[in-house]
Each structure stands twice: as C-alpha cells, then as structure tokens.
Amino acid sequence: MKKDETAKLGVRRPSYGRTALAYASPHLNLRLKNSLCASLGPLHCYRTKPSQPAQIIRRPPPPARGHPLPSSDEGRGQGEGSALVSRPSTLTFGCGFAALRHCVKKESASRLRLAFTLLELLVTIAIIGILAALMLPGLSRAKGAAQGAQCASNLRQLSLAWHLYADDSNGQLPCNADGQDGLGVFTNWVAGTMSRATDATNTALLVDPAQSALGRYISTAAIYKCPGDRSRFVRSVSMNCRINPTRIHGTPAFTAGGNARYEDFHRLGQIAKPAGILVILDERSDSINDGYFGVDMSNTGTRDGVGSSNPYWIIDYPASYHNGGAEVVFADGHAAAHRWLEATTLVPLGKARPGSHTSPTDRDVQWLQDHCTYLR
Image (cartoon, rainbow, N blue to C red; front, side):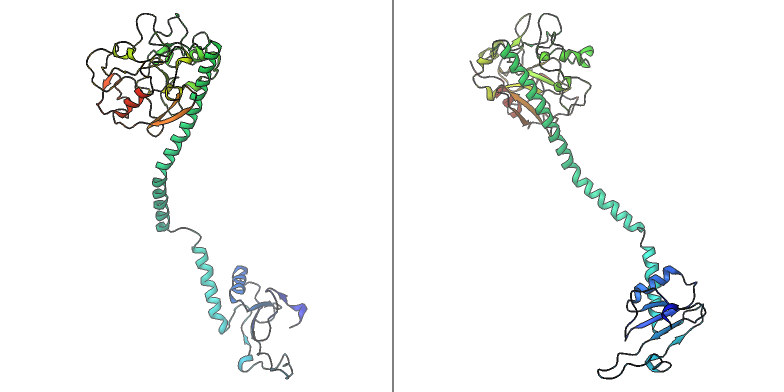
C-alpha cells in the first residue's frame, strides 16, 4: 500500500510483532471506529482506497539479530503472516473480533452509566437527609451564637451611650421609670412601653432625644432590639430596677420594705462594684412592658417587699433567645452571655408568669439578685 493512498487514523504505524487493521468501507460508524482503535491499544487503523477490500494484516515477528529483514511480500498467505480479507462493506477478522465485541460492549455500558438508577438516587437522598439531620442542631447553635454576638454589640453601644450621658450630666444617671414613662413629666432612659399598642411599634420614641435620654447618642432604633426576638415589639431591652429607679408618685417598685436594705444607684460613682452590677439585659417578649426590669431582693414577692420570706420570686423574665441564654451588659461596660438553668425561666413563649413564685433553689433568680445590687 502506497503512503499517499492511506490516511493514518491511529497514533503511529504499527511495528513488528503488532497487528494493523485496514478497512475500505467509508460507511463504518466513526464513533465505533474511534472506540475500536482506542480499545485495541496496539492495533493501529489505516484506511485504504474505497475500491480496496478491508484487511487485517498480521506482521511477522522481528528477525533475529544478523538476519536480513523480510520483504513486504514474504510470509503472507501462510502461517502467522497470513492476511484475512473481507468484503468492502463488512469487517471480517479472526483474533480482532473479540476485541471489537468488547469495544462495543464497553461503549454501550458507558452510555448506560450516564444516569443514576432509582436505587442509587434513593440512597443518595437518604444520605443527604441523614447528614442534614446531623448538621441542623449545630447550625441552630451557630445561628444563636451569631445572634448573641450581634446582641452583645447592641448592648455595648447602649452602655456607651449610658456612660456618655453620665459624663455629660456630672455623674448623674438617666432616669429609670417604673411605669411612668410617656406622661411628659420627665425624660426616661428609653420611652414607650410594649404593653401599649401605640408604643409597641413606634421606633421614633426610641431615638427622640426629647423622650428618650439616650436618644441624643443613639440614632438607630434597631440597637434596642435583640436580633433573636421575633415579636412585633420595637424594643427587647430593660434596665436593672436599681439603676436610678424613679417614680413620680410613691416609691418605685421593689425598692421598699425588705428591698430597702439594698443599694440604689443614682450616680455612676455610687457603684462600688461596676464589674458585677448589671445595667441592661434582654427581656422576653411575653414579659416586657416598660424599661424597668424588676428584681425582688426581699423574697416576699410583693412590690413593697413586705411579708414573710419565701424565696424565690421571678418578677420579670430575662430573655433566652441565644441557645437558652441572654446577653447582659455591666456597669463597667463589658458584655457577657449568661445561660439560664431553670425550667421555670425557660418556659415556652407565651407561658411566662411575671411575679410568680418559683422554688427555694432557683439558681437563675439567685444570679439576678447577686448582680442586681448589694447590701447598703
């Protein structure tokens, strides 16, 4: 076969000891031809003129050292060097047929493996479901931690505004009204009560310096609300009832009777242990009303602190939006997370009972008392 009469389809011409396939039919499927060439490996494909018959040529092995090379015509027609000839439209060969059949099967199998079987799809869905079930609790905790970090940032900004107010007022702390806000008598640290429909969604009250004492330092109403609080209320924070408690008529709640033995803080310099006295914390949406967070130090359960001691009483419920805990900010300006421990504190939303008795071993109310004030 002349060189200009063949078009090479493989990588290189076959060497001694290898088999070459030459075919003349121009109608052989190109994809099958390529697959055949790729699967046969050492078989290399050549195309002759269309008029010539297809052949499989098995070349003789290389001669021993010192013997002359055989001519191109030697060995053909007998023994190992014989050629198998077929019609132009058909490929007929001996040892190459098994390889061709393997190539066709491989091609069909590769086409069938392009899609999932139903069983494989169901197994994949089941594995994804199991992984999701394992990851969801972790994702929920991560979300709570992220919200806690944002909440702590909000509280630090409120604490900074609180300190700025004291610095601009010669140490005097802003008023912390016991249910008297919005009456036009004085400017409370924050205006509005969440138990009043007109205040519950009014963000303007929070940033109005004429009504909220911290409004001159804070221009963003969102700082007053924890990102974990999903209620419609515009505020979730309250202030410790011992931080400059104020009431126009009468004595502020939870400061008289047995509570009178404990310190009230009207000026910043009065707080001898600022790192241990909480100032602002988040309150639950089913407990919050004004910005006055009540803690009964007398353990009598009455607003006047009279009667026999019967610990413990929970007055206002701290929030537990961050994995069962809340962020609180202290008088020295640092914020910290505290996790609540009692089932009476962690009741579902809507089940809070402000001013109710809990138990003599309530660790959460004990913690609130320890960080609310101290004996005079």
